[in-house]
Amino acid sequence: MVPPPETVAYSGPFFKIPFEIKSKIFGHCIESSEPDSKSAPSCWVRSADSGGSSHEVAPSRYTSLLELLRIWLTRSATRPLNLALHYQGIRIRPTPAPIHFLLLQHSHRWEHVILCLPYSDLVELFEKCTGSLPLLRALAITLPHYEPVLPPLSFEVLRHSSLLQTLEMSLNCVQPLLSGVPWTQLTSFNGHHLPAYNALDVLRNSPALRECRMKIIQSDKPYAALHLPELRVFHVDAIWISDAFAFLARLTLPGLQRLQCPRVDNHSVTHILAFLSRSLCPLTHFSTVSKGHGGGSLEGEESFVDLFTALPHLVEMKLDVGLSTPNFVASLLRSHYLPQLTRLKIWARQVMDYEVFVNMLESRTGTNVQGTAELRSFAWSYEHPFYGSGAPSGSLSPELVERMKVLIRRGIEMELNDSAFNTILR
Image (cartoon, rainbow, N blue to C red; front, side):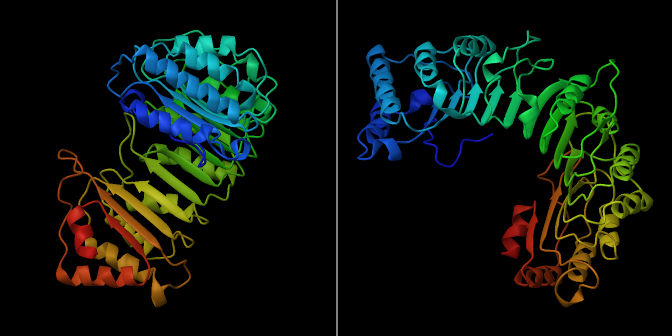
């Protein structure tokens, strides 16, 4: 979750911003001619750099800054507060407690809140937040560094947050279903490091969810299948790729429009096909991402045919073909497969035959389009299995370069991962 557009980004690193600049930022808010309507409703505090270092701030400056913050919050007292507390260092100096205490006094104004705090600070913050949060709409909680398995947080303070619809949790630890969270009213959930049975509990208790992103930890505890008609967007991932598809095999999502999952291989494609057959969903966006361990590549033209046949409504596809020959994909797309496709991105670990892809692009643009939508965007990313993304991905003849420039002039957006090729095409 990112701060709303009307946020004053007071990031940093916090201690590297000259104190005079901080004073001007808050001073401008304080001196606003229309404080109630124009004072910035947002505060973004960042207190350490990504390396986890800490910094000593002169007490006089820290006190002055707190006073400016206090005045600013008071002058904008009729406005909702969008807040991000982002502490990336393990040791924080000076202690953030005064900032927490000050912001807690305005918790009734919290609307969009991002908390990236050590676990002990999170516990303390929620324990001291004794009032209700009537304006809270979105809450994101994460830990700035790994911590071992921890006891669950109590979110009783959220029980009466009737406007809360978006919840994001990345706690690097196993958390059961959290007490106090108004699950039935959530429309968006993002959860990391969830055991599969906990993830199913979240989905089962959140009937209004329309968008969900989960990173699953497989467990031996059995869990039942689930039917969710309202879900429109679902991203599933896991440390081990097979666990993500095992989880997907328990779901039926008839209203799903966007699906992202790990890279599909010949084994997991059967789970995808079974899911699509079971759900009968009008999937318009399909994306596979190469993350985690395990899993191979989708091999053989028949496997691609089965997958593409099951996606007749697809508008956008981001496909990681792994070590498969990407020319299969290009050849299939020259025919009637994926007739509604307008945006295509491919990741591969095999060198692409650019002529095959140019032929495909020409067949799906301009006057050559027959019975299919016109392709408007094409991106290609090649990563050598040993040399990475910096490896050469082939060569372009002058003729191919000219044909690709013609495609660009027709309006197709084209991006190759090789910077030299992109320079040529400009």
